[in-house]
Image (cartoon, rainbow, N blue to C red; front, side, top):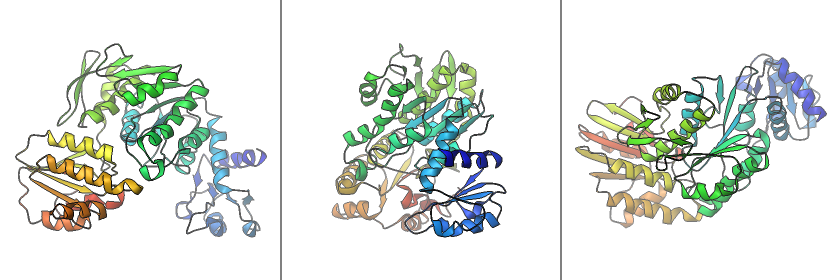
Amino acid sequence: MPKTEEIYKQYLKSSYQVSTDTRKIEPGCVFFALKGENFDANAFASQAIEKGASCAIIDNPIFATVLGTILVEDTLKSLQDLANFHRRNLNIPFIGIGGSNGKTTTKELLHSVLSQKFKTLSTPGNYNNHIGVPLTILGIKPDTEMAVIELGANKIGDIKELCHIAEPNFGMITNIGKEHLEGFGSLEGVAKAESELYYHLLKSDGVAFVNKDDEWLSRMASRLSKVEWYSFKDNLAQSFAELHFDFPNIEFNYQGITIKSHLSGTYNFENILAAVSIGSYFGLSPEQIKAGIESYKPNNKRSQIITSNSTMIFLDAYNANPSSMEKALENFARFDFPRKIAVLGDMFEMGEHAETEHKLIYEYASSLAFDKLYVAGEHFKKEALSQGDFGFDNATQINKLLKLENLENTAIFIKGSRGMVMENVLLDIINL
């Protein structure tokens, strides 16, 4: 650990600043020269120092002649080791959030709730992988009282690796769904991967917050010794809330207080309940929890509801998998509006399951009798054409058609994987 301790001293001098991008160098920061498939940042070490980095961590000895470089065996591992070293110097709750769907929404809800009482840091953006998690941890300063760490996974073993770095002493899994089937292989594979968080909490005597209404999670949590249950069906759970309605916006009762959210759908109510449960565990009053839930407004293409004159947009275009797509479509179908249009984009990382899963979702969406159903992407287009319907290559093509339509008194649902950039459906129609 001597090299890590040496780097940690530099990190403390830098006022907790770390960079992996020479375009974002702050004076005095520690620069890590990471390697990717198409780049090797070792070559930019001298540039980082010239721009003001206090030192550059490299793993290519060719560049070790530059003053201010520190040579290590592997810069990525060094970054992860430094993050873990810093984490062990922080005596605060670390709350890990895993799951197939709703991680980011739950993280943001939880941040909003906990911030009513504590100085809270949570994962910025989608920094939830083997690079993002260490960078998140290294952004935690001494005055931080709570850390909320999102844990993403594409394959079995990813959560285990992230838990080794972040060492969460509290954690929750949102749900088990058909995510990244290319890497997980099956729903059972997803469950095995996500359960690595529960296993870490079991080994470390940590506390798990578990949705009692979810059969997968209840079964997976049966071995855990420290569980805080939350539910809207079982009033004996430690955190229970009574749902008034979940559409178009969620409203519920918690300990005699009515709370109104800007989110929609039962699946989002489960995310809200997780934040309620964790907030309650850490001593927040019902009034503080209410303030945290009600002040959260989704604005990141996740579960966004946008009103433009008499047109209502349900924009959920940050990501998509079969489980989240089905739940969101079901939710939209319940909405009573004069005219409804559904716009779907391909779901990525499905591997050999892609054709089957796109077929199932297309058939389900068709059965819901929307006024119009538009689809874009290789797989959805192929399925639409096989059914004698129209399919499109991308969202921009659908946008051209929507511009020709009268969208008054119309509700539009939009969902697809990030790579499909489905928000382009709305170009020059409304301002995002």
